[in-house]
Length: 177
Image (cartoon, rainbow, N blue to C red; front, side):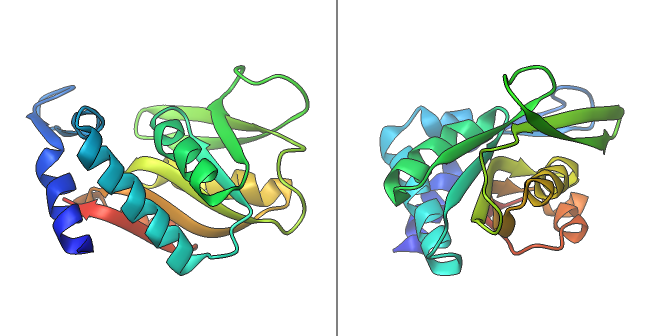
């Protein structure tokens, strides 16, 4: 059953060669969201992965911005809080931040400092893992707040970019290219 759903999800993901620049193959998760039955399949498979790996999850963290699309319904389905990780300057209150390196420079992720309690089990959700920089930064941020990263979960993994090798936390991807 899961294999058939994953096949439907994989077939629905749009592929755009040479976007946003020559040599890049863009994988478009929005085409999955445009088909409610496939979107439901994706959410169900993501939820099953969380329940299998971290049945006692206490927080779902979603990365700006596509991680919000999957993290919020997963948090609701699991009955746990959702915590957004955002780019610098987009959250109010006392914040924790982490600086991370991108292919073209650096950026900053922030989260509200009181959103995760010491030792809480956290699952971090995003749409895609490429080089792993954003996911590793999110792991570092959650850890600095006091949480324990139990799982890093993405819809799509671009295996050639070897992003999972940058992570020292459990990792799962639904579709791999």
